[in-house]
Image (tube, rainbow, N blue to C red; front, side):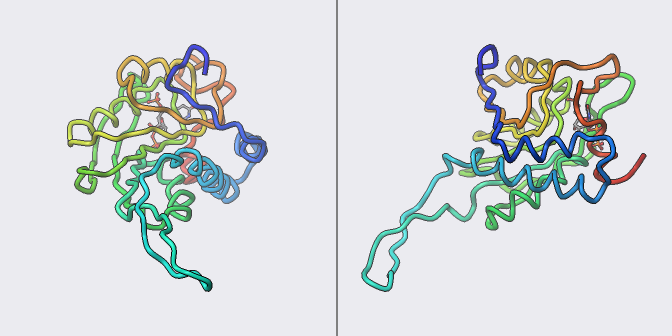
Length: 211
Ligand code: PRP
Ligand code: URA
């Protein structure tokens, strides 16, 4: 994407259609959750396009052949708690062998700084990690989560969100220029409280009904 070398915007018509309902203020919690899952599933096709394959001999009804399957240990999905949890099922439905790690982070509403409270991931050697969070706003949470994963030995890493702000993409490009970012939409800007405009509001609250 011009100006954002590491960003891929997955603006497939079906994703944009679902995103219009996700953004709508009247969309109820149940539908919001389903839409996050479905959009994450669609996006996962592209995000996993270069997954490593292995060759397996199989028998078709007509003859033997060497087919290709994904390596079972790939990839590892790591949601940033809480809102990232909403994306996991949609991806795992597509890649049932995927493992799931967790990173607990919340954004201090006054300082907008991320605070880590949990991290549990499988051994990173030889595994491709996909960090997921619906929202990339200031980029503080995603950048800190990438830092935590790198500190724990993760080398192959990509980040997947649903709505990104230019400020967050720039922050990630600056802090982690080698990490590809995939989003369904690149929105206009952040407001004075760090919310994405036009955005979809607070993803965690809308997913879990906490407001
Ligand atoms: C939201 C969102 C991201 C973060 C993005 O989580 O899910 O993790 O804010 O903002 P940033 O790019 O400015 O860091 P929040 O901190 O509200 O926690 P929650 O998932 O528990 O609602
Ligand atoms: N976190 C959210 O959930 N929404 C935003 O717009 C920004 C950060």
